[in-house]
Amino acid sequence: MPIVDDIAIAIARVYAGALLDSALSEGKADDLFDEMADLLAYTRKDPGFAGFLSSPAVDDDDRHAVLDRLFRGRMSDRLLNALQVMNDKRRIALFPQVVEEYRLALERHKGEVDVRVTTAVPFPARLRARLEEVLGALSGRQARVIEVVDETAIGGMVVQIEDEKFDATVRRHLRQLRDDLIDRASREIHGRKEYFQDVQT
Image (spheres, rainbow, N blue to C red):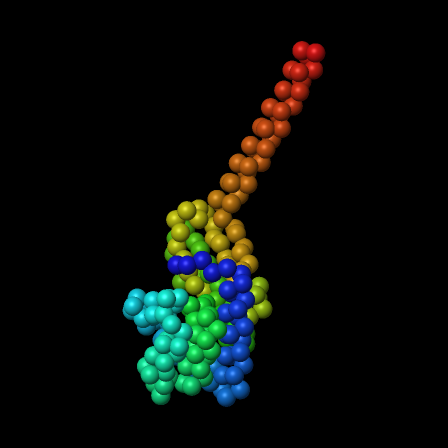
């Protein structure tokens, strides 16, 4: 998966925000997201089409014409026109990030948030509702838990709400303890060197 830098994210966020504002004005925000998600899924299944969208070797005018021929009347004018604008501005390779930013913006509008919870073992079903309640209170929004099992998360869990991470794993505490011990040992060794230097002088 390509690395997306902060500038690209910011640009994608502008496109996503404009699309969401336009779709909300007609009550089509969810429909537009479904369209965008379907197109993104198609690009992931068809590397050739994905390459056609993102390749700088494809002439912008040619891509514009092909997009119009393929999708005019088969998708909403709102999405197709957005794709054409992104193509003309040489930003169409950002489409996957635009979809993600649109999803996040739509969640915020609805007062929802995806919360990624990483644990060493699958989370017991009986605790899921309680976890969603606690995380909802923490985030101030309706939390949807996405569970990730990572056996290295020994004895705890990592909760990520958008860009903020709450790490409660034993591994983190062990690492902190190790770092503290190394720091203490380093200071003691350094102190002894100074002591021996003083003795020798």
